[in-house]
Length: 437
Length: 195
Image (tube, rainbow over all chains, first blue to last red; front, side, top):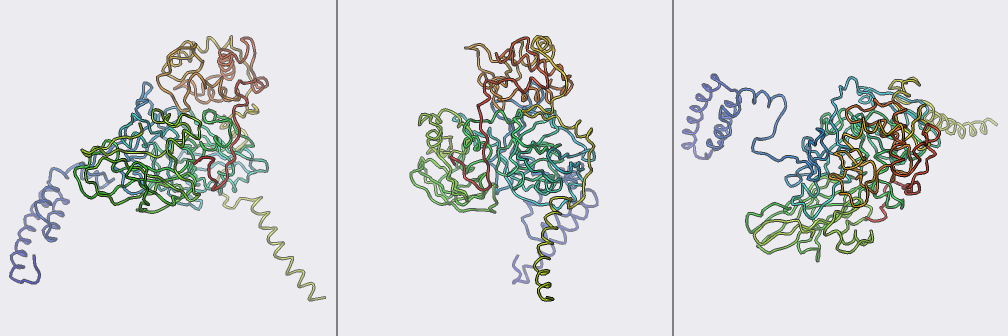
């Protein structure tokens, strides 16, 4: 409608009044939500066809409407889901879930929805249901004052909220993997809220000679792991909040340890105990990571710089020629992302991508680059540089470091923590493929 | 005189205050939250066993005693020979045996079953005690855990069938991989040896 033409305004007003009457009748018969949408649509001048198809009485009546009031759900048209890893089914023969992959190919921005956060459990586990009223955290060992905290007491301490990724050491891209969910789906990023562990450790008074902590979960295996006291006093958090609400059960409800930039297994879920000790304790979780070379061993603690293009990525299809944004995620266990480069010619030339979101230390960082595809076959890849100046390596560079044959990682998963560059090949028909091999 | 007293006080006072503050941080809690657990409560919570074995409880067991317990409580999942079951490998199988179907994290295979790869026998005791058997965790007696640990070590050629493990002898077991690790030196904002 054109407000400068009074003549044309009048019929519209009349129509609106008629619609309101219809809506009023609908309201009296049934759903308030439907009536509200219909009135809004007409007054706002939105195409009535769209408004009606989105708000049929059947779609938003009864229990679903009530459910949406209590706790919002995504649109029924959004169907992105997690999947178990291919190498071990979940639930398995014991009813345990092992590793569940987040659908990175559908991700936008830097935060992973809590409901889609990847799941890693050590032996595989059955998620415990812990009553927050019964919850206790014990901090003891080489301390002046061992203390036991309830959840309410933990929440009374000054809190911090920080954005950090968690990535499982098992996040290895293999030649047979098709999608970015399969190659990289064991990393996720959330805003975590809790208490700095350093504050709690000062509260209990760490004694001279202490050098490590052992953290322990309360799942059935009570998974335990050793962490350097230097790290524990640096930036480790005892968290109870994830993305503005309590932790999800699969993420350790009600309390987990958050060890920024460290391999996933150190982020003990369902945290029950922290013991301050004077040596590496060599728990079951620990012994699988040991290495004779202390510098190689340190690599399993702290993630290196890493990135991956999430669009276009394996299994996707470009619908036609023209403009696209190449977009993906970059992160590093060493700190914030300083720069992301993208190559569209298999790594011969690199261009600096734009950072398209907030940059936090040890957090997923969204990057993007404008791109025009004219039907040419090409290989896309991204490369992350972090604030420490560390540059994400290629698989050939990893092979050289570990003294493996140059092409070894074209047919094998990368040993240690895999932060190698991920190539995607775009075929001339617009299909996208894993180009490791 | 008056001036010099004032001066020395003005020098002393900040130093005294600083000293009080430092003493305060070191000696008393800031927030006063939380409950002090009793020694008994801590003991009941603490299931972590150090490589020194200082937390090990009284009790003892040998491989001979462990064999029937293994068949009764472990073999259903781990296999009668300690490999080839649906659960992780515990005993290295003969050369040429098929690889395990699933490689759990840490990936347990012939090269790194606990008895061969862990630098300390305490790791085995700790894990059996805290996490086994599946669904009935922490129901084994200390004697049973000592016996099962001895059984796995014997089957891996680390100790003899008659060797008795207890709180004193278990930490003394010389493990094949006892020199197989070094400690990483983690420091804030430090690059890795390889990015």
